[in-house]
Image (cartoon, rainbow, N blue to C red; front, top):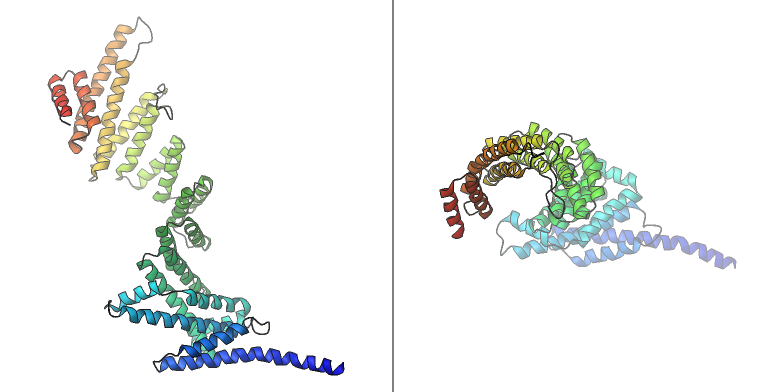
Length: 450
């Protein structure tokens, strides 16, 4: 029994040593492979031997949590990726002459499994041996002369992975593989943060842009949130998250992020306009108008703000039932709403926007406003029979005045869009109301030719 006990105790160190021997085997084979690379004749037999050995070491308790084990795994995996990348570059040489173009295409096409593994192993070093990673980071920031030969090699691979991540991201973006580009821009930003303790705003932002082009709501939300949480956000990040949440039909989450954006960037017009759109959709006209007043103060030459403000007051003056669009009774402040709509439409017209669509809408809407205002007084009934004669005369005068204001505006609108049938019909009717029979006849003929 004693002999058995002694034998059992003797076996344990031998087994542990065999695992360390696997790390040594991986180290020797990897160095042999690197020597063949220097000679210009990479021999993958050595690299495969190194991989087999390190994979065994990564399964054993004695070596799987050692930083250097993961460092060798990172170097081996990265070497496999480099070999595949170089093969892709050579394949492209006959057809792509420009070196930069060839590199971007190669980065976009080369399989990434080995690169992913190398990147994961760098992160694993940070997890299992933060002191070792701190030594590597110090070597990268303060100079590699303070590192041993093997540490220099993992430091260089770590730095190369960072650079390769950026190149892969650009290659994937160029290849329009936006989902993958987003991931690699993000990884580049993360690795820069890990190694150099700086917030890589540019690559975080590129990750967000790529996620947007990929139309991937989950990544849009995740990557933009990362910038917000890291306190490097711009209004774009809040707007992107808002749009992504709206695409998922999560209005509550969308408004929550929009409110945070409005607090963080109270003067940003884009976020304000998103909020205004939301208010309009929810029928919150006063809130929308308050936002638009601020927008006009910040950008007084933007015709859209005047157009929307005019439309809101126009809608308030002429309310309609949702769904059926049936006309509802005029509000008590009808005249005030009409005046406000008129003011905003006219101010927008006065800007003389080079955008014909905006200018057309402003001119047409003001013409339609006068037309509807005239129609209101034309059909208005007197309060009592005794007031009928006087009221009818006043109503007729007001309706004629409004119709005559509407005509030149709708004529201008028709000049911008000569084939617009609704405008022609409205003008024909107005010509008849104002007793311009010849013009009414001409417009009728014009309509017949359509």
